[in-house]
Length: 180
Figure 1 (cartoon, helix red, strand yellow):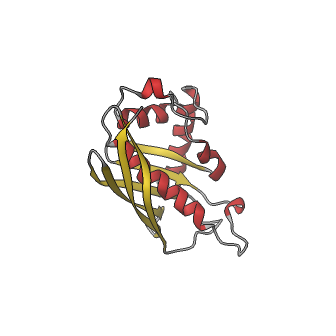
Figure 2 (cartoon, helix red, strand yellow):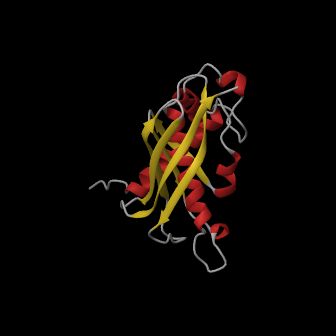
Figure 3 (spheres, one colour):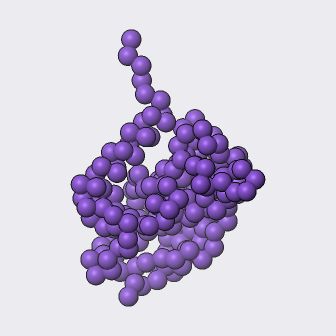
């Protein structure tokens, strides 16, 4: 009898495939080149990140999380807490959750932007509801746009494990503006 891979195994395989695709595309940490991105939709920019045509955010290496999926109005990141993410009390630092959620909700907003527009986080509210364990496997931050207008966008996000347990949730308000 053939056993089916667990959700955590499927997530890890997807992450390996995304990283390999990005490496083949020349992916590296850096900043999206403004001139190249100028006429692209936010979703096209995010897809270029996933293909390795544009650099991914350096913070992804610092905190060991990575973009794994995008679609219009949605962005998903995956990370696995490590010892270097602990606070002095031995639990995963709240900043790790917050940064992972800020990335997910912000990139979800990015996917909804028309060419020539950009965003910045104006407000982020994070609630931690469960402590992550170092042996608990990968976590995913899933950001979803609630509203995206010409000046403001709102989104919500959640961090879950492979069993669907909630670890943290967030909301954001982003300022939308014409890119220069």
